[in-house]
Length: 317
Image (cartoon, rainbow, N blue to C red; front, side, top):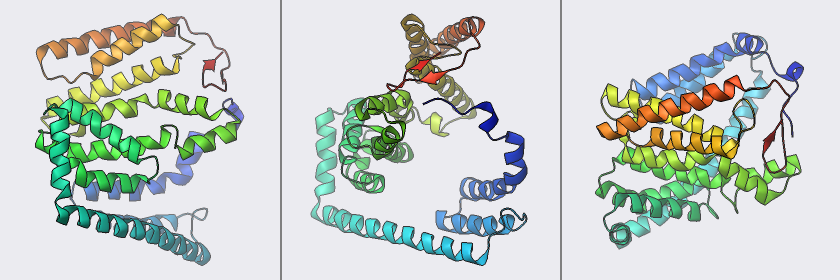
């Protein structure tokens, strides 16, 4: 597969001109949830109403009566699916809770990890991936939120970080072979080999496997801490993930050699280490310097040639 030709790529100005109004409901949703601390249902309902209002402002997006009826019908079907999943999960969770099994599982996980929080995170992540084979993401999260989250919190991980960790790894199962429906679809569309596509998906999405460990052990990455801690955590994580992605993809302005990829991985690791001490802050500076040097070198050596992607996912000139 190759990228779209330049003449087929939608123009940013044209998209913004017709779709800027939909930034309004998104902004309202974020504001009501993050600033006003509204309940999710209330914030979502207000955002939906605003969507209909702003859509009516333009002829191209103005919904007809039939479109509104169709939207309500599709929404009802989705709600029914969620209701069934939630009801079944409630039955399972209730049975586990009243039998005392949840307490025993939490105690067992803590014992298996030897009170080592990092080992417990690995065990929990593997549990998420294993349950993600036969179960939908929502069910995986709800189940482990009851079974594993208390153990994570018991070892000192903030509740928000613990639940986000479980949710992230529940989602990661979607790109983790062998049971990864999006990869099956992508492989069939590209007429590629499934296993090669699956390993490529994992390689390109490697940040999704690493970032949850970082914010679980270093909560400032999820905005829990002082302003200074949050800024350092976010900036180093963003830059580290970009360098890690470039190293795994094997491309940065041009195809990369294994030595260059190794340098990018080293810089990414130094940046992704939690900045909890002066030594680790020094590691951040070294990572920034190394990453900047590699990026500058690759930029100076770039060649303006067309790019394509092989069946195995390798980017070639």
